[in-house]
Amino acid sequence: MADESETPPLVDAHVHVFRSDMPVMPDAWTRLDYAFPTEALIALLDAHGVRHAVVSGLSIAGTYNDYTLAAVRAHPRLRGTVIVDPTATPEALRAMRDDGIVGMRLQLARHGALPDFRSVPYRRLLAQARDLGWHVHLAIEGPRLPPVMAALLESGIDVVIDHFGHPDPADPLNCAGYRAMIAAVDSGRLWIKLAAGFRLPGTEAWRTDPAGDLDAVADRVAADLLARVGPERLLWGSDTPFVGYERRVSYARVLESYRRWVPDPAVRAAIDRTALALYFS
Image (cartoon, rainbow, N blue to C red):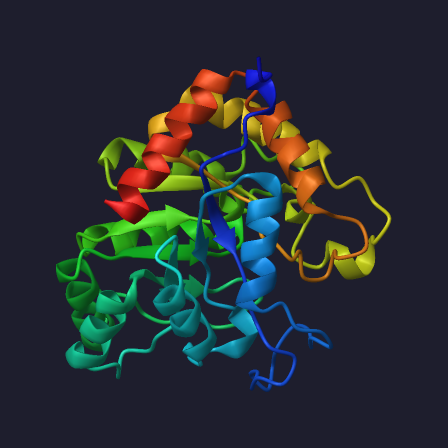
């Protein structure tokens, strides 16, 4: 009989695909000198027994979403989130929805000035996305999370917080961003991703402390989220192919981390049900 503790997750809620020659933003935090095409993603999922995945809009590519759209069009087992700006037309958004896009990503980590999400252009964009049944896939440093999260929830759209909410690594369970995120779960429109725990030491730790402990912060935060939030509001994602950490992180390692965070197979199955309902219903 198969060991239930080794049962793979059904849904990886955070993956990337890209080409080595695709356009990137002038201020991109890194440059990619390799490709991770959809075929490589599918092979990796199959090798580990993962049935579904959600392709995340790549921050360094900005609003260039062709690679994500191609992936979800080709593979019904995939869904995707895209990066769009307020000038996107309703027709363009509907076409992406019909192709398998389920949300729009706001990749605000490492950004300077933040947009005003209560402005007319963003209110219009958020209303259009909400009417399509999309969510906002939000990535931002914890200290800057509360006002952005509040503005998004005011719009009526569902929100998925990326990377554990990027809490302050010096005091992750008591920082203002983390406390605000936990309180917002009661809105019934917010989910939190147990994704890329290796990034929690900080958005620049891959440069400033490349040999540091990758897991200590995520281990603490995951245990707290499981106890205080529960599987109905949690998702799991690998962040493959681990941009910036390719030499230290593997798919087998992130699966091992996930099983350590959520050791009970029944609870992991509940997280799978949450992901299936959010992304594939």
